Length: 191
Image (tube, rainbow, N blue to C red):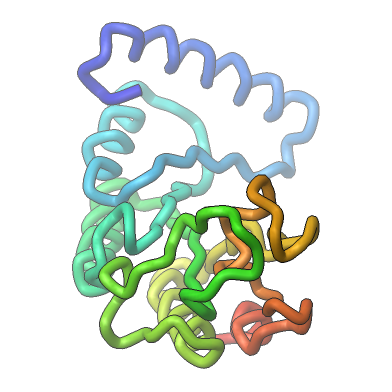
């Protein structure tokens, strides 16, 4: 729901009820509020702040093909949001291709070089470099890190399946089901 939606007060009331229940039953739990896209996040979280929503971490989705291919813009927005809202930011969803190839006959989400960031080719090393860069960016102030979306969505039905994985070339396992170097990039300490 966007901040100008007439259902905003209903959403906030629902979030407050859910957060209250979590705080009462598991007070040590960290609560993340997540939105897709950094460009609308500043207004979204500023409005939640003015509505006195009690949560711990800002979650952002970042996919270059949907949210823009400039990591400099992402870095700028993350910095602005952190400064204004004063909460840790977690890149709650991201992914990047290790290939533009196919392992089945199901259309992939990413299959064209125009969807890529120029500095990060659709190769195993390009995928790992993207994850390393994004990890460093997301750990700047609060050491929040990132979560990789669907690392295991490999093609599993057959190489002729038309209803298989649309994410197979974005997984952290290649077409032979071997781990890509990006898997190791997730576990590194960048401080």
